[in-house]
Length: 140
Image 1 (cartoon, helix red, strand yellow):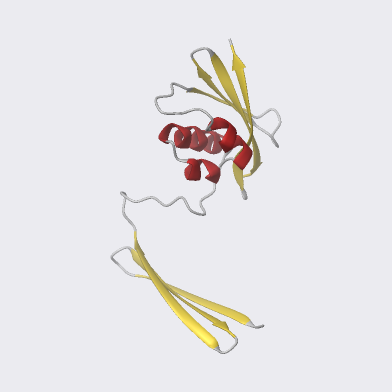
Image 2: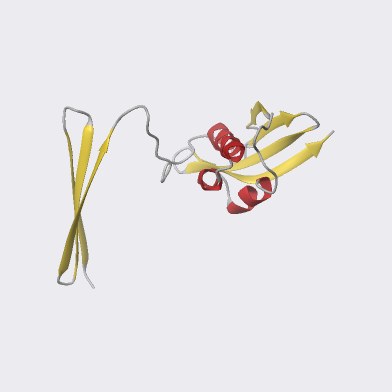
């Protein structure tokens, strides 16, 4: 089975981009065209990585607050997302306390809240992206 892909991208002065992709498999060929514009009102999270431990922790907490499991999975493991989403994050009052990077391979980001704290252990790299890999709670 032979698969060949070719992609061409062009930008115009109006800030829009288009891409034509042709895929050939055997004797069948198909072409798909997509157009996107750049503006400040749209955001896309598919395929976007969290670029730092702080970004991963913040994205997870924000997604939990919004009740958005799909966004939470972008920067956290399934186990962490499932554990955090056992409670409703709407109206949470977590305060970012920063990240301890004593162990650069697994920085721990802390969030405090009335009655305790949450510690989000992260893993990854700047090039490949960061994810929250462990969640631990400490109650007063």
